[in-house]
Length: 344
Ligand code: GAL
Image (cartoon, rainbow, N blue to C red; front, side, top):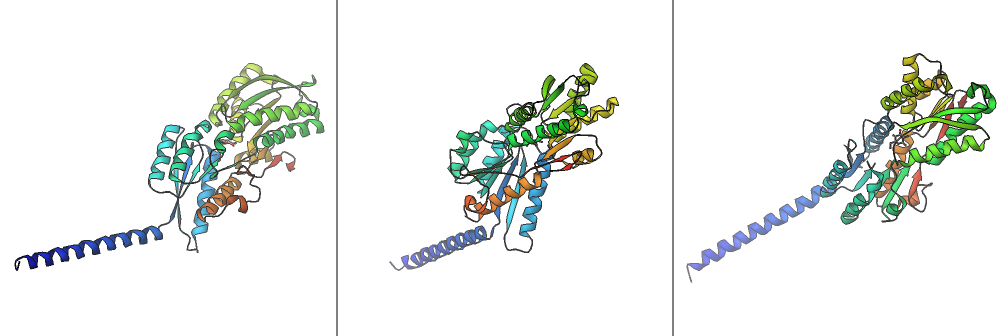
């Protein structure tokens, strides 16, 4: 009996020590978690796309500004999927495993939203999709998913209106051969991308509805890319020469690609329209090298993404805070046109 006492004492001491260590680690854990910055994962389909790069630069600036001089601490982790949905899914899964607070997702393949939504729902982490719009059925899957983008049909209508206004002011400026019809080329962004489909349709419709006859000479997909558009346009100029009176492009990078071909061949051709409002295009319009563009404003997109994200981080309802958000949790950035004759 006597020999047991030191053993019991030792056991009690051990118990105390282990208990103490447990309390220490537990409290240290909660403390550092509470002090940690909020984590936002930003997933981009392709950072070599200039429009996306401008948007992400603006988003980073907004995050830096908001953190300066405030006790708010957040961390925006930008991931480039480099055009692979599989890579993007992995990036998203990794961030969810690391307890990220909000995901901002620019899908590679807009029809793959369901997979991302299911993963986010399992982890109960809200998602702000941007620029590549999930289909309606996916947006309805959960009330904690949002979309920030542009009104693509309206972009197309405004793009078409640039042509209509120019034609109505001076038909010869567009209908160069005076045959009463406009021979045109359509350069599209990306197969099945909502912005490409809707811009193509609405731009043509707007011109036709204004009573202008259109004749499509040719068209192709250049995947939003300047280089691909140069290749396409060189081929069209080669094939159709001065028959081409107008080139409608789904975005400005492709319009710049057309201008590169124009410069390379040494043509006098400026009936090119685009969408985005990137700086180089605005300069080209100013120099009368291009007809006009619809500015859909990458920084304005970034501001909306940031506002929705901050509302979610604060535990607020973005629908209450963002004035233009629809009942189906979609918010669209403002836009305006810039043409050879000014800004509207
Ligand atoms: C469009 C934009 C294009 C391209 C695309 C990517 O809205 O006009 O330039 O960036 O998004 O999804």
